[in-house]
Picture 1 (cartoon, helix red, strand yellow):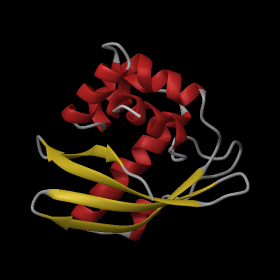
Picture 2 (spheres, helix red, strand yellow):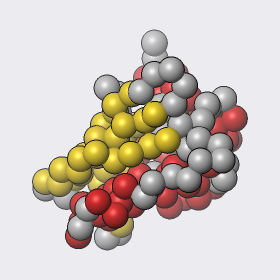
Picture 3 (cartoon, helix red, strand yellow):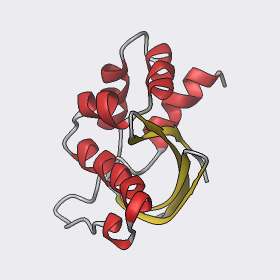
Length: 141
């Protein structure tokens, strides 16, 4: 599978895009402090924006420029459309940040997604961009 196609598949398959309908989401960012909390908050913000189908916010403020460029390439030049299409195909899930590791200006967040019949654990990579943590990769288990 080509890298851009795989990227869009990850956007569709990654179950952290929506929290369960009608269910109050736990703010897992409150389990952390300092920069770790800021990383976890970025992941929480992704979940929140996804729930609202706010693909514009996801592309402009939550994703790192390199990831936005990959999504644009995979979706014919429009990050907003690529993310919007992925969100429309997503199921409902609850996301919990379990662990945050920071080193050399990069962070990884281990997230557990609960939904349907299957829970899933993924690792997201984040980078600092202009002093703000942004999602650089939508990792895999």
